[in-house]
Length: 355
Ligand code: NAD
Ligand code: TYD
Image (cartoon, rainbow, N blue to C red):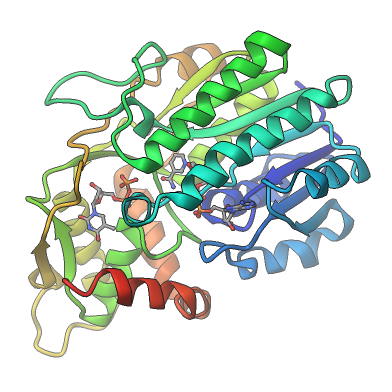
């Protein structure tokens, strides 16, 4: 067990980062201080952590900063005497990376490099750099097989290519400079506070409002779904007990074709919200749209290493996790309305008119 005193969490106002900070302070018994460093891009929502800031006083601090800004980041690491970094900050949406890769290259590659370099310069003090990454770096599977820590990299989108570059840098900083880096490559997350451009929240909210549910291609692309709290527990387990220089694949052992996920969401929204005006099931809203270019067919994770070495296992099932998630979005309209205003809406209008 490692007792970090001052843990920097980059991207803590995004989906997984906000859930991670909640997990640390409310559930994991973390005794130190969390410093959330976030540039507050379109994907961030400070409201996701409002109550945390109120409840935890000085144990939670927020700094608005860009991880590519070397000087500012150096100042933050020193002012807070950071002894650990958990690095979430990234541009994370594949469709955006296809339309405009610039920010992905900048934040995901240059930003990660900047942090690694700053950590290296503080090697005596920083005892753990955890890099949060994705299974998308491995590319696409056929009908059989699983990704594992031994799978060669083969990224297909600008997003996954930028994450792959950041993974290689993290690895190199351990091999070359001995920086105590750990990395997790995780499958698709879902749960509270996810920005509604990703499949799950987009479908929940469109279903609620009786809008079309845009399914790409034939809807049979497969993803391995993991409830976000389970991912947070995995990251914390690795930060505490994982071996420096080691990579851990994290997944839900929950492979589903997109259409099955969308059907499940429709049925849950039908059950939990008022019926559509014409009495149809929300499944009738499904609309097949043009496929995503380079759309990976199947992701599936073999997470034997983290299960056997560190004893981590997901707690939620597909049934329980989606039930909770739909309930959360239906019960948190204020958060949803706030996050859907502004830049996101403009981007959707400009890029998705063909739908
Ligand atoms: P997100 O898009 O919801 O949040 C990203 C956060 O990073 C936002 O708060 C944003 O403001 C911040 N950010 C972006 N650029 C920044 C910059 N230059 N400086 C500082 N902050 C910046 O993303 P997420 O879904 O929470 O993903 C978090 C991490 O987990 C990412 O590294 C992603 O690659 C990885 N990951 C995500 C999933 C998933 O299913 N969402 C799965 C596996 C891994
Ligand atoms: P997404 O949530 O964007 O995650 P990722 O691309 O990182 O896996 O998409 C999940 C799956 O859902 C993916 O196969 C693309 C598909 N998808 C749709 O069919 N319609 C949509 O509107 C979105 C956003 C995604």
